[in-house]
Length: 220
Image (tube, rainbow, N blue to C red):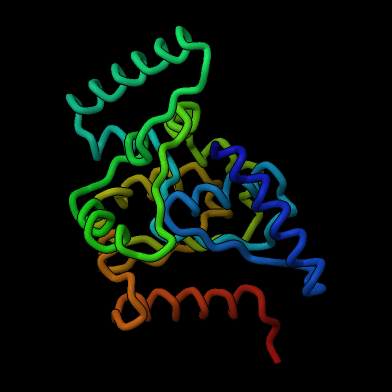
C-alpha cells in the first residue's frame, strides 16, 4: 500500500540520519516514488528537509483517466468492482497483475517488456487488490498544507505521456503562491532519457545539483 510504503521511508531516513550524524536529509523520488516521498513527508513532516520529485505520479485519478481513455477507464472500474465482489465472496485477499492499477503508455510498456524484464533482480509480482484501490485515491494535493514549507523541486518531462505535464501544473496550483515548488521542465518524455550517457539525464542531474547547492549550501 502507498501508506505502508511511507513507513519504511520514515524508518530508513531515521536510521541514515543516525548513522551519518545528519540533522537533515532531502528526499528524491521518481515516478510513483515521487508521490510516496511527498505523502511520507505529509504524514511525518520532519522526515525530509527538502523534496525533489522527478517525473512523478501525484494525482492518480487524472493519470488513470488520461492514459486509459474514457472507455478503458470505465472497463477498469467495472473490473475492480468484480474483483472486490470476488474478494468478499472468497473471504481472502485477491491479487492482481502489477500493472493493472498502474497504466503504462506504449513507450513505458516497451521499456518494461524489452528492457527491465531482462535486468537481473527485476520482478513485478502480483499486488494486493487493496494496493490498486489505494493507488486510485493517491492525491498529493491532500498533503500540501503539511509540506508547503519544505523547499521542493519538481523536475518533469514536458512530453511525459504517462504522467502528463498538466497534472504537475494542477498540483502546483494547490500550493499557496509564496510556497509554490521550483520547477524544471525537461525536453523529454517519461523514461526516454534514463541512461547516464543521455544528454537530458545529465541536464536533470546538474539542475538538481544546482538547486540543492542554492537551497541548502551556505555561501562560503
